Length: 416
RNA sequence: GGAGAGGUGGCCGAGUGGUUUAAGGCGCCCGCUUGCUAAGCGGUUGUCCGUCGAGAGGCGGACCGGGAGUUCGAAUCUCCCCCUCUCCGCCA
Image 1: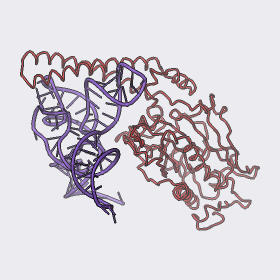
Image 2: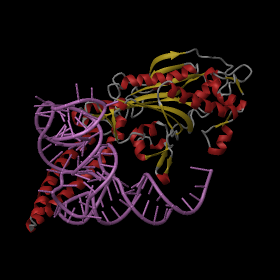
Image 3: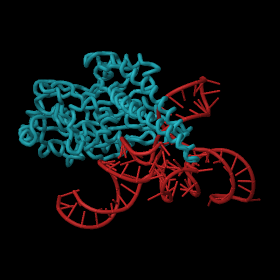
Image 4: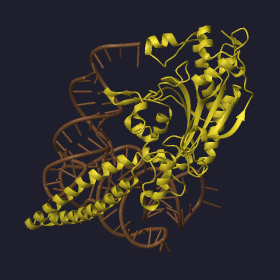
């Protein structure tokens, strides 16, 4: 959520943000409602004050006239309360639809074509001999899309034999580096989240169509570990000395991918369930952007160690998500499909999520303020798996195991 | 799934309709005192909304798991929901 004070102090800033992000929000309606809310609040406070004073008088002497006046006042209070409740409910709902304000360093643009290339790393393997992962994976018996369809339908994958081991190796490798070398605390959270959690991180109400919901229990399968990790400290005031808090977690991630029916239908570039290790930080506002750059480099470090060519792009205002103030994408080159694949999205939310989830900190001088939150994939496996098998395929049709993964794969140089 | 107990400030804990302005204790912070790893004495100590103020802060209101209700008045009474604990049942 944006700072609601901006509705009166600087509505143009909000208007501009909504426009840059290509959202549609009736801001004037919200501004009017906010003014209405404050007016009703003031009246109600005055009425309640009067009622309280009267009640104290009645406690001292039971005067029938006083009680009669108090009754009338109580009726008025009740009416105002009802009025306030209605306005507040509507306002709170609408506030959830105002997007975050992009950071000034973010390029203004409409779509992917306006994203800014920040850097490129590594040598791209190119040539006709590189097979796409679906041919390679099915051929080697390490992936099966046919079997997955039997179990769950389209856009799922079964990892088999060395494929399953490679998947598990990746998850363990990611977690080991982040916990042992980058200083993150490992969390293994639940995979189901309450509605409040998803409102807190900003997936709801806007992205409900993209999520798997367990209707009976009113719970959502997590679309990313960002959700549980950021909600770990919901409704808390964290002492400043505990900051920054750095968490990493493996979870399976579930996305309905509504509205992407024609895209990436072959293979596992886009699937409904995938594995991901997520990094989340809570910081002070002052250190936020430094920690954000550090988080990006923690994610990049993994790609480098796997020796996968990649590039980093800064997303333009039109391509970044609703809740984000600034987002970098890390994309690896996959030689078989001959394109870059997004393997990590690193975003800073400033106070946007903290306001929604009510996560604050107490500074050393006693002031209470919202924390900054940020997160990034570190990394998502299916596309890393794709890049590894496609880029590391050998002439004799096997996969060379990247050196850093060998300890996780029985020290083999090749699979199968 | 069934039965019972409970949820009060950073923490412990009192509080069954009206000086509760949430007792008391611990902790924290500040000051004083003391011949010193400590103790004693005194004081301070929440969050949110509104409003006034340049600011420090003042004033008003709300907040005792969440929500609705009864009442002139609710931490306290009623209803619904959530969570925790104990026992039973089922179960990886």
